[in-house]
Length: 530
Image (cartoon, rainbow, N blue to C red; front, side, top):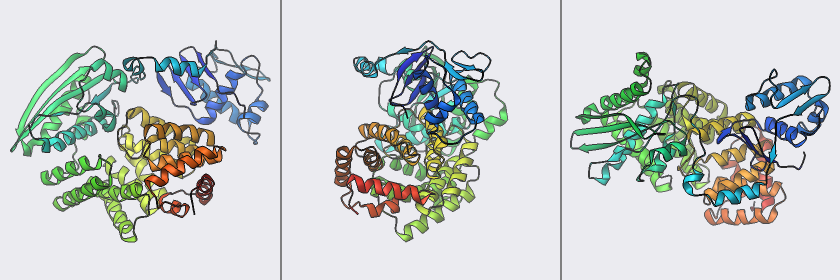
């Protein structure tokens, strides 16, 4: 592989070889790693025609591939650039000779770029996401107006339910819960938030729950102008809370797309439970789950079990209870007991049976089945079903990326994780960071330098994340950065003193045994004791 890591601009595009990112204006363009390599090599050698044989030697490392494969990848390069074989604005085919990049390129120094960026204000730095080519919305955390801090879980839960309801509409791009909650308790500048999240609309409001009465107020804002497009207030008894949510959702959808078919609205109104006691305990469980520490996970598990007691058909409660066992294993970085694993499997499989049309239940249950039970293939099937039901579910894209990597489908994993990042650009949930899944995918694929870069960036953002630290240590070892690898292991053992190479099999799941052996050997090389 060539050593050049370009940082250049052409047309509306910026290519950053160090970060392996292609952006159009400010928006990240999702490209497969091999397609990125192909584009970077063409640009680096734009002063000449590059033959198919040379591309095979450099990009495919000399493996035997057909010219049809090269043509397919070249077409993927053109698609990423909005080019075509007819236009050939950027990549020109030279008959019987090869290919040449013909766009006007401006090479720059990425270090200088980073220094310039560091001098920008926070407001300037946040102009980084453009809205997608369809209606897009973020639901900001509704304010708890009850005067009772104990009701915070209820306001947060209603907000999350509104996000879920809106995300059912396939034509609507909906930002994930965790990115929306990054703005909780902050003064909101609609234009700034719209730029931070890359959306056209914002929904904000408040919730008041007093005794048996509930009031929900909401307003829909056009982010770019700050213009109020719709505002209303909905009052009712607690028994009417589902109906109140439906009214808010229907009003918002009506303001964005007045001609939306009624059947779509009715489909989005489906509730996973109609039992109010079960629903209340489920909201309490979700509030604890999002704290992401061991004590809060135990509290969440208890709440989900209470929800199941009140409604034995509540699929999402079963799935989240199973996920608590998975998070317990993830947090402690040790194997679940045999009894815990059996209980997690029982809960997850029940969630799948009850939640055939519940994307959240299928997603959480699928990951628990893969991670705790080791049924990766069926877990992946569950997540694929969740994505078919709700293509806006960022968690499903994230988990789908993890599972694709564990199945050895690394290019598919990276594509899915890029989608998860776009739906959830400011993820505040302390577990399952996208960077760790990306680093894992690159490690499985043998792209150790990229695994290192991704892991290092992740650890800078989440210095106490054991999965990220492990992956950083392993990729350091595989790239010869042994001093940095040992420092990462020292950091890991401060967080989890008892962790050993022998624990790796207990917490890591892959379809191919050789991937696990390679990972364990890398950690051993980094200094983790057996």
